[in-house]
Image (cartoon, rainbow, N blue to C red; front, top):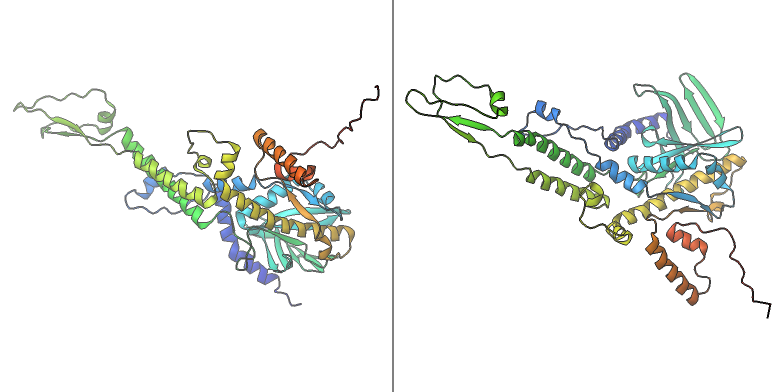
Length: 418
């Protein structure tokens, strides 16, 4: 097989690194744009820079609901591998990185008979993907960078070999799995974008930028709203000029008549209303919420009546669909990680078809409350009456996320004392 080579992958990563880092800056609320404006001078605008965390909210609202549980039909005991790699941090890190950068990568290694899993963000890894299996045919990753962003240690992944480059030191390690030990975890892949699409979309970034501009204009206008502009007409030409700051904060001003007996007249300009900015901010919030499958409540515009769990689920239907889609695509990537991790642990080339029955399982996107548990319980009884054994303890857990007791129910016996 002919490979693209490490230099090709380095250039590919360099071309995409800027866009991934920009989305990480959006998530961290550290991204600053050159704001357009025709009325506010740049030096004034820089004093009122606004910070908004809507993009972070859009990512976290989905990432916090994607809770990986385990693998069902675990014939190869891959759950033990994940349990030994701090699963609470590993799964959350892989999911969050994939939602921000469109994909993340898992670097699989082995040390002292222990398989190790490390998440690498999309700004530090890339590869050539096999569209059939979702595995890489070759991969490249930067394992460490200096303070200026230059690579210190790198790795080039091939099916039979992994090459580590640390400065001028090159180390080759044999790979027994026959697949590169760098596995992509991809969010919403398709035929055009095999490495997926970021949760932070261009539309979402626009609405956040639009809202930030609105907040900046409102903040600057509030200064004039607090101290409305005043004027004096009819002052004598011989009158001493007033100190503008003293005139703004003084509670009493004294003006005397001139030699002709005329007195000045005081006035105040109409202050700007803050209402248009509030409406404009709400318009931006509505656009962003529609893009992310959220509600205005999620963005801080609290409604009058509290919502029930069912109402929250209904209002987040688009978020639920996005979560189910993410579970399918992430589950495929995690299954590939499990497959290669088992091959590396056992030093044996399993066939990928042997893992067809191993199924990733996730907790429900929405937790069940007491009312929902009651409804599900009634439904389970009726279904089991119609089709005996249709819903068991495991099926109920898939729906509710609640793990039942592991104890067997007591066996009722008749009264033998009669």
